[in-house]
Image (cartoon, rainbow, N blue to C red; front, side):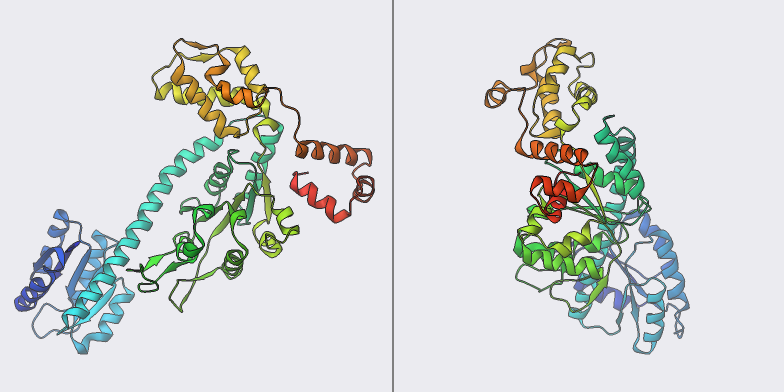
Length: 456
């Protein structure tokens, strides 16, 4: 099966052109040949070429490479990401090396061996693919960035809890500090990570999102650090890892609390050195990235239980942002409902739709175990089920099965009671940690651990 690729060969020797075309036609879907380099711009108007093979000299008796340098420059003007392989004689290797410094990708010597030529082109195609992927990611990020900037300006909520999050984002975004975002599922941790990136000095670069909870132990190194061809059974080609793709941008490691201790050690090494080595390679690459992590796991308790490395925790939490649960910001519920109502009313063509004020109050009394994500789905459900202009039923938002399992007015959880008890004791002792710890029957270290757990 032929490799899908557009190849263009430019050489003044007709025999070289025909020989190359006959061989490469067996391997690639499209191979064009041309003797006159002045016609190069016309070819680019017709096709997007993946690899261009360019002779260094076109005039008989000339071997200074001047024409090759000229046409290399012209090709790169047309396509700055073009992959150009120079065709050169043995005595012109120094010129080829100089041309690589000016933007050429590689060179082949005449006369070449077919398998060597094929290998060079296949490697160049992989580089072309990687370059196009980076450009695609940057373009996608630019589009997402425009959207994210609007969504951050409209970061829904006016409660003190969410205002603290906004203030922290504004303070930390312009720095390059590592950020750890803590919070329950569905509270908007990824939205915070994107807001930090969008307001950072790296906002023109890529934002790479990695769900560590979805990566198996066997694929961890390959996914994050990349691999070279032949590193393992299914490694049929070189592949850059997520850290490599995040170079000069931001990498968001979601669900970091799910990593096993061996994987934590491997991640820590990369974070400390800011260097990665692809699986199967001995070469280390220096990577420049902004690190943002998130988890819903109690990392401080996990450190105490030796399930999470303390040195890794210190590495990732230069600044901590705790996302409040929805029940900690119930006054924001009407604003959030209004926002999602606009979104889904437009999507489902129900533009005059509104919610009864009494229903909004009832929504504030529901426990929302799924936080904002659950509220968003509830509003979409209500919009879909609505038959009138006003939604008057709580069941439109919350199914009867949900309310039978747990009442709308929910007593505090043990965690909530513990948090309130610590705050009350701190207030009684005017913030004195030693006195508070003694009253609670805890060591200072244990009290600090519980305070961190509850975001106090």
